[in-house]
Structures are given as structure tokens and as C-alpha cells.
Length: 243
Image (cartoon, one colour):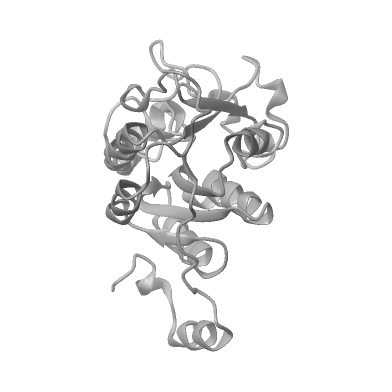
């Protein structure tokens, strides 16, 4: 099967990884949660448009590719809620003066634009309307790449009794990668939804998916996740928050 990262690999890369045994399928867990990482207006813009247009107003936008992924993630959130499986969101927060951006300011000279509203009345950290959390969903607020760093995410996963995460969101090479590696470090089984993730750089997106698939997670399509979730019982999580 052709993969998004194929065109970036050398023949040496393929031989080394096969010989080393990386890329084995770990499989899905038994009690999953769907994690939607940072799909907010700051990373998508307020409408689908080419990335070089979008980043004029939204400095962190990933452009129109993000809106294709939003539709994929929306269908997954609907499917997980229909089976009474946990849906968890992360998004950022920060002071209006960006004082607490800390190390983010070291590598980006537009960081002051990333927390304050960039256009109209939409905040950069506001989750897009198409994926608006519902009353039974869980939202964690974060200030660094991983959705685990400085948040209650691990304790919520423990409270629910989850053994695995289905990860979507952005950016693939940044917050998605950091979150997956932390989940892996906590011995959670991870699946990354290839068509449910996005990034502003094509090479970063593809190569990060490749690296995650090699070492930390299974990278699969949304169709595979739908097939898996459809076979799960709808009474796995009696302690979900009420609707």
C-alpha cells in the first residue's frame, strides 16, 4: 500500500528499517479515547483558503488542508459519541499580552499574534465550530506542545480506564508528535489518523507520520478507525460525563 511518506525515503532507509524491525503493527486497544489536538482557528484560519493567504491573518494557519481534515475528524467525533466512547480535546490558552508564551517566542517572531484574536471575534485558541465540544466531551488546556504537559489529561485517561488513544489534529510534526510520544511513554497504545492530521509543511507532515509509524504508533486511515470503533460495545465507559 502506498504511503504518504514513500517519496521521502531512500532505498537505504527502507533496508535499514526492515532489518531493524521497526514499523510493526501494534494494533488497536480495547478501551480507546479519541483525542483531538489543537484544531482551533489559530491553526486553521477562519475559512478554507491557500496557506500563504491564510497566514497573512493567522500566523500559525495550516491553510485549506486543515479544513479537509476537519471533516474527517468531525465524522470520527460523531462515530465515537454514537458508541459512547470518550472524545477529548486539547487547545491552548495564554495571556492577552503573550507574557506566558515563554519559549514559543524564541523561534517565531509573530508569536504575539498566536494567542490574541487574529480576526473578527474568533480567538486563536477557540476550537472550530465544526468540531465544537459537546457536554459529555472533555477539554484540556495547554501551553506547550504535548497535551499531557502541565494538564490533567493523564489523570482523566486513568479515571476513564482508557488503554489507548486515537489521535487527530495538528500540527503533525509539533503537538501531535509530542502528545503521541508522551502517550507512548505512559504505555498507552496509540493510533494516529493520517487523514485526520495536518501540518503547515508537507515534508514535516509526511516524515513525522513515517517516524511515528516506525516507532511510537500505528498510522492508519479514518476508514480503519471507523471499522474498528463500529465493532466496539457501547457500554465500555459507564463513567463518561453525562450528556
